[in-house]
Image 1: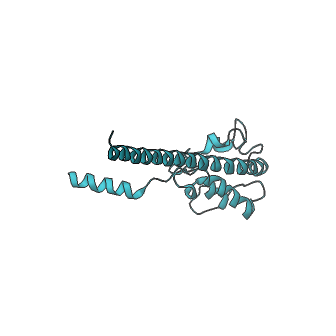
Image 2: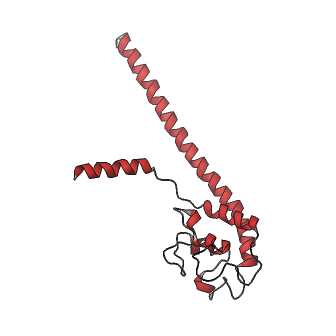
Image 3: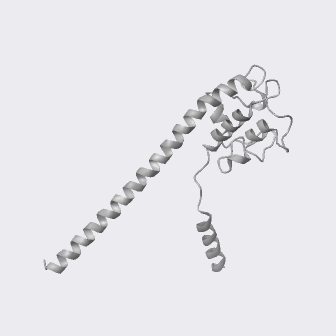
Amino acid sequence: MKRGSMRAAVIILVMLTGYAFAALQQESDSTANADGADSVRSALQDKVDVVFKRSCATSGCHRGKNAKVGLDLEPDKMIEGMVDKPSRQKGSLKLIDTSDPEKSYLLMKIRGNKGISGKKMPIWAKALSKEEIEMVTEWVGTFKSPDIDDDSEKETDEEDDRDD
């Protein structure tokens, strides 16, 4: 092999190795971010369980087979019953909306926002404190779906329009 060809081959090999390393590092960073979000959610989950168990998942309210509006807020059923599930009071809203957590009906109910059906929750127990509402809000935010690049969607839509 000629000296120039050898040099070019070495340069290409170094570049490919660099690209491979960068891709592995990016994958590692993504996994670490997901693990970090899961650990934050887990820590908050323990606190939310305590608050909901005391204030919401009580006899005659959101516990057991006859839970109000079919919403069981016991720790082992809470997530499955709320994440991306429609509210039975406002079907157009999700209890925990992963695409826009601030629009979650759960948050609207514990804050007493306008537009809710019925009364602010909890009705029969002491209202959640400001700190508890903030903690539940942070917990709901941990369910947010990864952002979609809006610019790439717009470009695709514009390209589709040009094709017509």
